[in-house]
Amino acid sequence: MTLKSLGVRTGSYGSLQPQQSNDVFQNHASPLFSRKPSKLLLSSYREKEKEKYLCRRKVGMVILGGLALLAFAFGFFTVNKETQGSDMTDIPEALQHQKTHGRNLIGSLSLPAGAKGSNREENNSNSQIVVRDSAGRPLTLTVPLPVHPCKSFRLPPPPPPNRKRIGPRPCPVCYLPVEWAVASMPTSPSLSPLLGNLSYVHEENPTKTEPHGGSDFGGYPSLKQRNDSFDIKESMTVHCGFVKGSRPGHRSGFDIDEADLSELDKYHDVIVASAIFGNYDVIQEPENISEIAKMHIPFYMFIDEETEEYMRNRSILNNTKRVGLWRIVVVHNVPYSDARRNGKVPKLLLHRLFPNVRYSIWIDGKLKLVEDPYRILERRFDVFEEAEANKAGGKYDNASIDYQIDFYKKEGLTPYSETKLPITSDVPEGCVIIREHIPITNLFTCQWFNEVDRFTSRDQLSFSTVRDKIMSKVNWSVNMFLDCERRNFVVQVMIS
Image 1 (cartoon, helix red, strand yellow):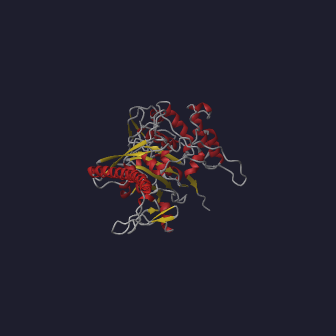
Image 2 (tube, rainbow, N blue to C red; image 1 turned 45 degrees about the horizontal axis):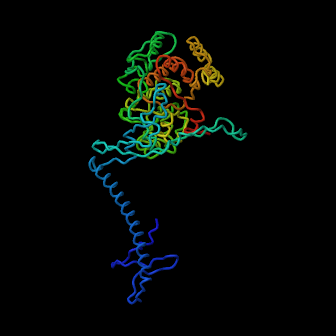
């Protein structure tokens, strides 16, 4: 809006600066001596002045109305702020701590099949965000949300073949802004169908009773115990690693320093975890991480003593136990001679190492995270072929793989087909796992670990068997990323 007719007030005497109209400056101040106008001119002058007055009055009313509205809004917020407490948490931090009734779009390893991931209507244009002051008193803010930016997103067709760039490529993924992603986290845990209480076997002196499978670390469950563990009940006790010791990480094998154990006991909504054993990979610093994620999402990297020695000798690791965003957790007395098996402990049993965490994002040590964890959280091919690929690649001895696949065939394993849709694959990439720590998903990863402990360390081979056995008992499923989607937020860095 242009306010030329009001002028610009200057000086201490209330005079008006000359105004420019039609590129000509006009001085509206009356001269000391002026000619008396005729009645006709006076009448015309008064009409013009009346019109100018009415115009000024309308403009003035609009301005006063706007100022009054701003004053009311500011006063309303101030009153609410003073009522609830003066030490308000800033909004981004409050969003992280106080969840709204938002969409849970990922649900990976969390939601029962057919369950709703939202307790807010899709066409609702507002989000109520509950923030708290230092005394814990709530203050509800209503934040207008425009149309969901991913509502009309469609995966584009794959790019044309390119001789210069062969192999798998990432595909576009629609992410929400970080603030929206934080606000979309649900206020309460997802439903754990049927299973409500899950506890774990403890044996100080585990004994092997059958020729195949098991370990001192994971125990030696019999085939009957294995089969019984797939009979889902309201309360269950199962093998899940760490069978010895007073708690996971304390004289259990896979031992962790007391200071680190205290850190792992803390409550967190979300953590990111990874591991490097046998000095096999090089630690990668995450990229594109938001400030709110840096403040509230800890990054944990588990390493063994061999990897620790290498990192210290090259001044990568010092006494702060930090490398960039990663908090380094050194594992002593690793339970297996095979570094791949040791890596399966944090990969599949994070709920045992972090008993007070809601969500975890696991990425293999060979990968670099290149997207914000909050945004990833908000988003949520065939076993026989995988077995042959493992044998061809020399990833495990053929006899062990054949024994495992023959065992699963006798249990009813069939090659993947479209009859299993909407499940898109029997073999996960497995390098990224996003999960909510609730009883049914904890049971799933316990049983998955037990298969790895009983058979080979190639977790892709046992994934579909464990998944299908649980799905046959309860209304629950696993969501799987498209491979090209996964390549959008983690990348493998080639080390020369």
